[in-house]
Image (tube, rainbow over all chains, first blue to last red; front, side, top):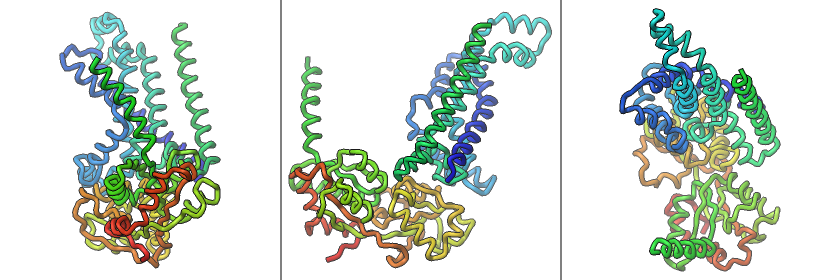
Length: 221
Length: 246
């Protein structure tokens, strides 16, 4: 097993997850930032739950939901002929749930700190709601987006417990880097474990340092 | 005040019990049998036994790294022998406590063997061959019997043999290649087919126990170790689907 195979798989998983989370998480974050419903804390709690829940709880329910007899899995089997567990697609779904708060929360915070009158001014100037959102709210919340993107990417890269439960350890499909490292440590293959771990240590540092540099530039502006 | 007293009782009671308990590292396939043996031993002697369940390879790595186990019930002979050679186990204590067998298990396939050659039958769950002797034996069986070509592309690997069965029992894998001893699990769904792999199809699943170095002078641990060889313990082990030489 090469060192880069599992890392590449993890990067693909993190990339797919991040793209989906930005697309799905942005409307959720926007809604949360604007809503006045008394249900807001409930929705917020649901979004934040993956931070608190152990990966085993998520893994357990995903195993049941995504499996060939599960509510989502059986439907997927009819659609595609194969189940979601033990598949890359299944891992993407699992990661989206697992990393959801890491995308939604920074974006929501950015939206909430937008001065309300900016949007109102755009509306009175005749901009549609959607237009105002994309030309005013999004550019001004860019920092939140960068944080959300970096955090969900990094968090997915470090995912372990959920994948261990629903992945099935298939090389090239579900054996992501954290699982490969676990395998190497268990089979006393410390050289390979070191190589992969150091790669990940370097990668994590680079990603986070870049984010903090960008953040600092921003606050200096 | 009352809360403080209760806390104090716990603080005093828990470590004392923990220090006396016999820590046993148990290969996953033997977990249910070991639990019953521990219960019998506790009832007989009043001594507490604590079981740590995992794949043989994982437990082996933990022992090398100083895990506080007194007895190791492995799923192979190789790792206990290596521990003996490296001085982690007490020389001369190694003995075969059980011989297991592999079994194909499914809750959806009509014919377990046919499902091994049917590429469309779904995933085949086995234990990680790197760390689990039952996974290694499963791969050997699949290779020598000519099933590997069909199975390799749809194999999924459990972290240990219990996870392999769990994959099959939840229907996520069509077939599980597991230990016969696992089939007595209480909540296991009804099987649609089972097929015991003949012993000749893979290297034997002789399972050895060894007394670990840190328990060399531990009379309680030694007592449990000896209990494993008694007729009563052997009867329990047989009842869980293992073979034992007379």
